[in-house]
Image (cartoon, rainbow, N blue to C red; front, side, top):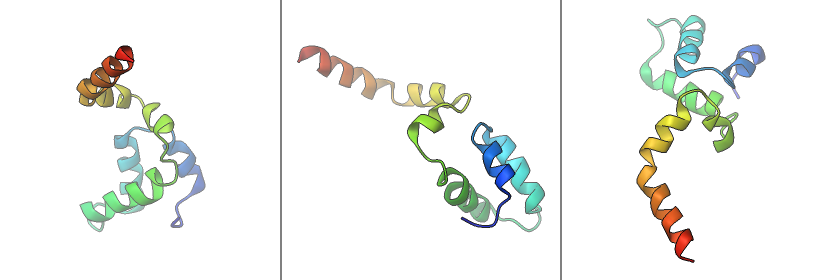
Length: 84
């Protein structure tokens, strides 16, 4: 993990993507950070540090997004379970 303040890392557990982006932009000024670098840090250092499904789904709004996106697959799996 790169040298990012542990206090910020702890905060990210319950932070929204916009809060994380705001904090990173303070650390790495916008005129110096590229979208690629921002995404790399977010994915490798922040999400990679605590990337369990149960943790991600507890972030406000994520459950709704994922349940809508995977709605058909969930219904199909549930129907398959009911038949057995």
